[in-house]
Image (cartoon, rainbow, N blue to C red; front, side):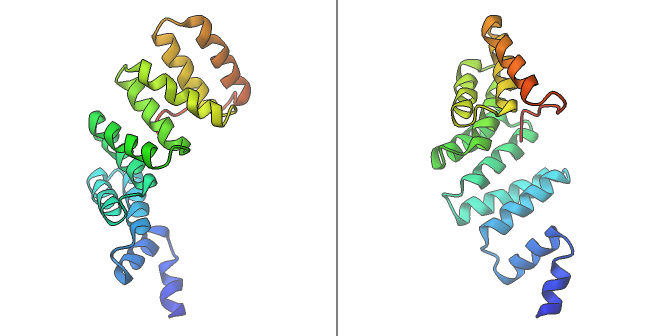
Length: 168
C-alpha cells in the first residue's frame, strides 16, 4: 500500500487519477483534474471533469467557478456567467468567483454589472490589487475617469511589478 501511494504522489495528476480509481465519485479529484486539464489547454476534458464534480456535489462553489472559467476559455461567455453566478450564490464570500464574474462581465461590456463585483471584493479585501485594476478599467470604459484614477494609483501602489490577470 505504501508503494502504491508513493508512486501516486509523483505528480498531482497521477494522484487525482488514482483517487478516482479508488472512488470515482470524488468531486474534489474531478475538480482538481479539471484545473490540471485547463492548465494543459485540454478544455474539453477540463469541462467534463468540472461537470462531474458539480453533478456529484451540486453545492461545490469552487467547481462551478472552475467550470465558468473553462467555459470562458472556450468563448462561451453567457454560459460562463451562469456557472460563476451559481458559485457566487453558493458561496457569497468567494472572492475568486466575484473576480471571474466581474472579468467576464467586463469582457461583455456589462460594466454596470461588473463594477459591483469589484467593489464587493474590495469591501472584503481593500488590498486586492487585481480588483482595483479591473475596477479602474471598468470605470474608464464608462467614462468615469475621476473615479478610475485613484483605483489605478492604489493598484500600482499595492503591487507595482505584477501584471494583472482578469480571469483567475
